[in-house]
Amino acid sequence: MPEKRVKLVIGNWKMHGNRAVNAALLDALVAAGKHLPAQVRVGVCVPFPYLGQAQSALECGPVAWGVQDLSGNAADKGAFTGEVSATMAVDFGATLALAGHSERRNLCGETDGHVVDKARCALEWGLTPVVCVGETLEDREAGRTEDVIGTQLAALLEAFDVAALRQMVFAYEPVWAIGTGKSASAQQAQDVHAFLRARLREKDASLAGISLLYGGSVKPGNAAELFGQPDIDGGLIGGAALVADDFIAICHAAGGA
Image (cartoon, rainbow, N blue to C red; front, side, top):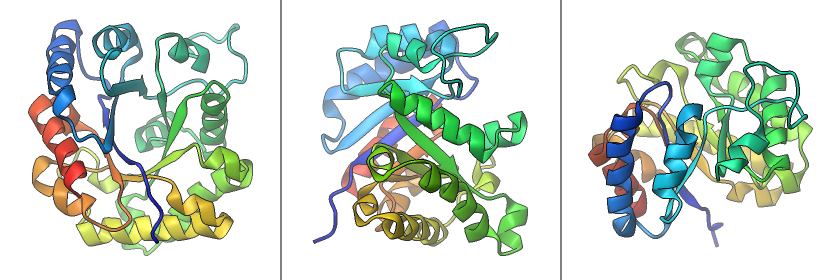
């Protein structure tokens, strides 16, 4: 029998929003909450200043909330200007934490080592790390997709034991498809997800049950085809997560896959 995997759709708001815009979006998610597919976990990762707003709006419903980044410093407090600790996120009821998003890797110089540290801090304080991996267009065109993604994944497989890895979620986000409007084809995405699942299974058979998400210009129009692939368990949604109707439609697509 195939392993039963959790379906998950997470909205990544990135550096978008203000109190009024957020309120309208969160209200729409709350209103849709009782109609969301029961078999799909739904969450949003919001900018740090709006964690309290997300908590106030969502804490009595089915939609989880989390952060887009956190400090990889093991200390839960200290002289680390500008950093936000896992304990601070948990204090606002967060349960999700992105780690290794391509924009953090490319714009902020985060390395695989930084991603490991951030995932470790998230786990230590009970957050679910959503670890992102992905290749650039140059990598893909040079035939290096599996080499790049394999190296990114290997850093986690070497740093954590099986019990810790089973608490993670992985998201494949081709850098060339993020914010460009150009999504990987369903087959391209499936091929990479199958590769990731095979590598996880090599580490331990139980890791084949980890949820693998696709992120990269997912829209209501392509969500069903993407989520219908055998190794894609949901999505990490960027731009479409800022439009309530689109995000809710994507959640329903995951429920029908």
